Image (cartoon, rainbow, N blue to C red; front, side):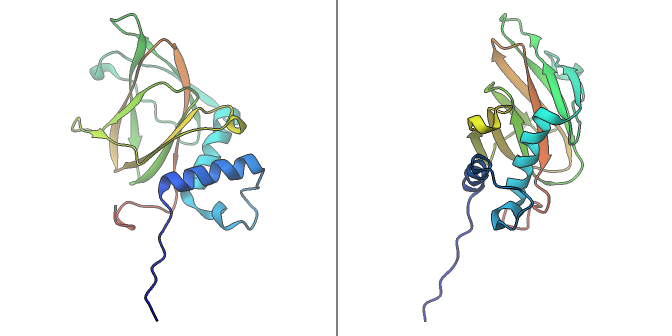
Length: 180
């Protein structure tokens, strides 16, 4: 009998799956097996927090030395961009990660964003997905593999003056347990 290996879905495939579930109106607490996926759960929570959570407000800084701490677990952050020398808007803010894992970063805007570690190295997202109209509060969700530490989130340049942000840990998925 041949040895068949089951291929696990990629993070992008799971992200697309949760968007489909949200559009279909599936309840995250039903017995649907996909609802137990940590990436899907984090995206569902993030979408809900963007509309219903208590918000904190942060104004970004143009330079890294004075970047404000934006960390607000399970809370929406209303981000105001600084005016850049070019006349566009953007800026930097800090986010502290207390537990290594994959994190979903959802934005209310399609503004460009970069995550940089404490050594100045960019962290590439494992998945980027435009959100469907069913999650009107968010336009973009990205999944980042983050270790314990402080990260700089850099936004812009853009014509927009701000956005809403939520960062959700994908509980249950810790780096190193699946080959990452």
